Length: 504
Image (cartoon, rainbow, N blue to C red; front, side, top):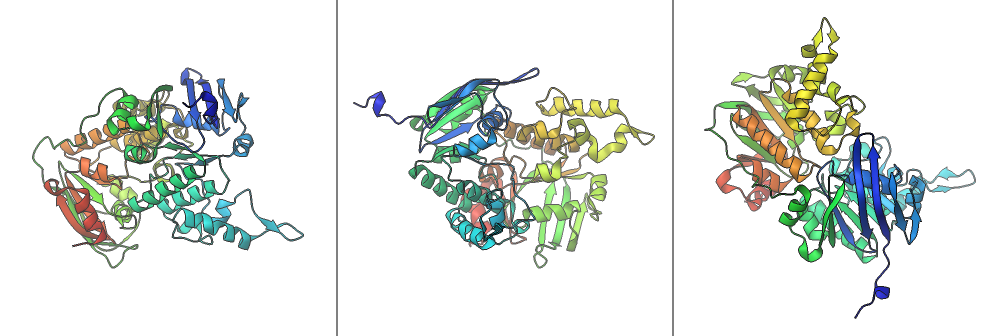
């Protein structure tokens, strides 16, 4: 029989951690133990306290009470330097990379390799040291590549390589696969298995519960700032995790249209953009239906959406709204016509993070909350409060900065901006990236309500479960062209992937 003395000592213990802000209890008596070489999944809805807990572990903020115990040594709080010195490394959901530097410079930022009598940065040495790290994560780009040239998925792989460069003992991965393809996610799972084999612990934060089932040794669930429960490897299942996360079972994803489909709202005919100038895409969206747009990373889905919204110019083809030509010369003209885009990267292109929630919600339509050229604070706040109530944005004050909200609530602010206006057609680009299952269900319900109200809805998604579970019809893009379309009776992961990769 194994005695307690034979068991390995915990690498890390978060002991009775509490964190309070004025009027808000963010964390209440949270205790979590992390063992060497284990993959611990930390899950919960947006706003459950995961980010706050990780900021405490990273030394960014101090707990109000409780202890952080590393190798048996207790700390009331950690500084950022102490956290890094203890071997704690982060792979952040919101990417912290610099576009003006190359890949190697990003990996060794602040820890540059130097040589010579003047201590100059040794670019060649850094690039040589970066290459094995990039090979380890299966990156197809090199250490000399400019980060400005990388896609969102490639930047995520860069973040993982950067964390691996720190000789970490605990690697915290916050939604690391949110922008990765299926193949890249498989590489990530192998990276995690390699870390585990080396005795490195991984704290894996993800809303993709299928990945959690695949890689986690143990699951801890946070709900409303408290530990709602835990699951051993044998107990981990999709339904068990959801019950602990939201305290109830979720209904099936798909809700059929409430009424027969109406006329075509948006029609694209032979559309070509600057990214894929030789590829022409044709598709349509009818009133009452949700059209899912699938395809591999690089298939041209986002580029198509940006062309329709007027961000990039068309190289050919036509776009019609309700049968009439749509002016897509600029986003201003498409917004005036009632065509809106919920962008893939909400922080870079969907929000002004340092502005208040109320300002973000009215930013695209300031004229409606103004009088004689001056913004009315009363109208500004009334509109924001209406959207806060409608969408369930978790904030006590609409004057709070958007940067202070969780990812799910930030996405609701982006939605509130458009829903406060007069939508005729809304394009959702990765609408639930980095959002928990409860918030996902709310956004899916909102999409169906919009479609049933006669608004055109197009949803671009890399999440196969989502695109199959929510769409009425799926259009698959490949290299900028429509490879095919599937009616609901033909939906399957196999059929979508077959069109995406060009198989017959």
